[in-house]
Amino acid sequence: MGTNRTHTKIRLHDAIVGILYGLSVVLAWTINIQWLYVAGAVAVLQIISPITKFCPV
Image (cartoon, rainbow, N blue to C red; front, top):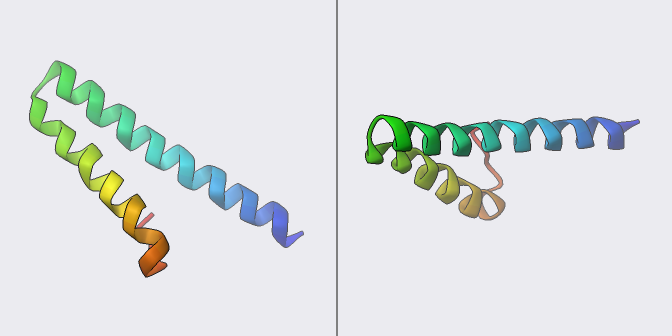
């Protein structure tokens, strides 16, 4: 039962991260290129989260 809950958490995390990436690209395309900093920040957090074992999501 715990495994199913873990999979749900992972899917939810992936969905949130994917939405942030997609939203930053769309905003960069339509409004201002500096919205790509959001995608960069999310990428950095994804890279360091296994090391620190902390994820803000």
